Structure formats: structure tokens, C-alpha cells
Image (cartoon, one colour):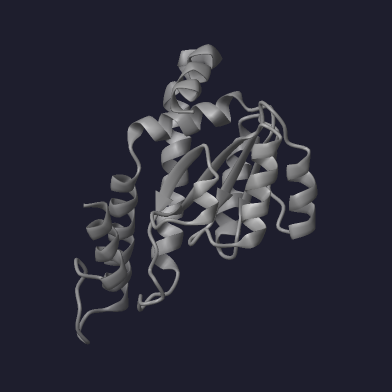
Length: 203
């Protein structure tokens, strides 16, 4: 079902087609499909576990590759607004140096469409070796970045076939971040001990 859900975004099966369809209608259907598919790809248990990891983390580092950096930076800003210690740096060398300082009780959140970047793989390995929780947001196809994660979230990809490039992936990634942020807000009343237990169950 998950695979079929992603295919609907890749091929635009549920959207209108033909030369008479206006661009605004194409965009609407692509974004609706991306949001619907991303919702189905991520279960409540994982969303709660990710929210718990972020809630109890001493420091959080968001990393995004390519167009996903804008999503990572926006997510970091939201966390900062909540009073958390967060970094979202675009420079690869700074990312590597910063991740090397993460340790037990910290969290690395990687956002990548394909999850194939050797640089991101190295960041995940470094964080995991130091005891930090690694969270990934990639598409659901098997990939080396997600394979190194403690917690995995999934987005969809337009596969390069969309008539509106990058919209499906960006919309999907942003929606998953919104889901995580909404889950955190809904469970803040439970307190840190409950969040810690949720994370321990997931790991």
C-alpha cells in the first residue's frame, strides 16, 4: 500500500491530466497527493518517538541535503523558538565539526530525499558512534542513510517526472516536519519522563 501511495505521486495518477488542465490545478493535486502519501507512510508510534527524542535532547542538529536544507532550517527555527539548543548549518565542513561534538542525549536529524549522500552517511555514523540519537527523513526506498538511523521517517519523491519539479518532495518533507512538531505540541503536557519512556520503547 505504501509503495502504491508513493507511485501515485510519482506518476500523478490521482491528479488531473491533459492539456486543458490549468497549472494551479496540477499543483493542487500534486501537493494533496504528497501530503496524503506522507501521512500514510508515517505511523503515530514513530512520530511520538521522534517527538520524544527531540523533546529530551540536550542539543539538536538538523541537516538537509540539496533543496531539503530549507526544510531543515525551518525545522531548526521552530525548535529554537521553543527554547531548544538547535543548529542548522549548510556548510559541509561545519556540519561535520558540529556533529562530532554531539554525544549521548543529543539528536541528529537528517533530511534527504534519496538518502544516498556519502557525506550524510558519514554524519550519521559519527553521531551514532558518539551515542547521539539519529533520526532520518528520506523516501521509503532502502538507502544507506536511513539504515543508520535509530528512528526513520519517510517522505515521497517526484522522481524527476513531475511537471512541477521538486514540489512533491518538498511538500511531503514539510508535512512530515509539521506532523512531528504537532505531535510535540500535543504531548508537551506529558512531561520529559513520559517522553523518555516513549523514546526508550522505540529504540
